[in-house]
Length: 272
Image (cartoon, rainbow, N blue to C red; front, side, top):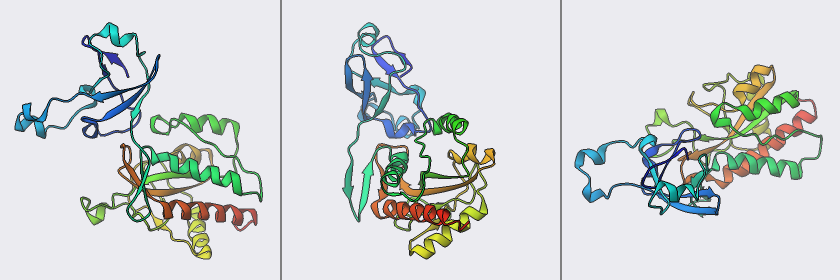
């Protein structure tokens, strides 16, 4: 939250990329001096909008959040500038073994890493839960200053775009087809040896695996690989990323965990 209007509405700024159009009428959660409160994104009633207005794309700068206050003074007694605002959404299971929740990018990566910490015992490894990936990768930069890794595996979610509204040539990867391996994105050309190693490991373990077919986006690998570290990105295909209702496959998550564990086991044996 970066401003309060005279009539007590809150102005918002995004951390990372969020489509403003999905915010209309949404209920959001705000961390305030009085604890967690709710607000709703202010939008004109649709029956009072012209046909032209309904077709316009929303802009974040025009979004206002109503927390039930009538003045700037009243709102300022509750909320500080810089207050954290996030989606109000529940976690649910639906369809064919699918999960729906906010922030699956990158809660999924965190969940897999936690399971590896619980179960992988063949050798010690450093696990980093980094922040600020969406705003310049400052978290991983701080991590690299402390750790000098021999290799790095970035656990991520990646946009699937495997929906009826997307043309086949723009479908990046597909839910239910297993872990997603990037060979290149907007920030990294991945080490080919590591990419081939991931595919051979999946084949040996009888796991599904797929390439990320779109050269888009980036992640912490952008910083890691410039430190002359062999880097691999292993992602879980996710629909509707950066929204309040991201969707992923439970099977893909489980297979990604198994693949990364198998990669670590082969690395322990000196197979690369």
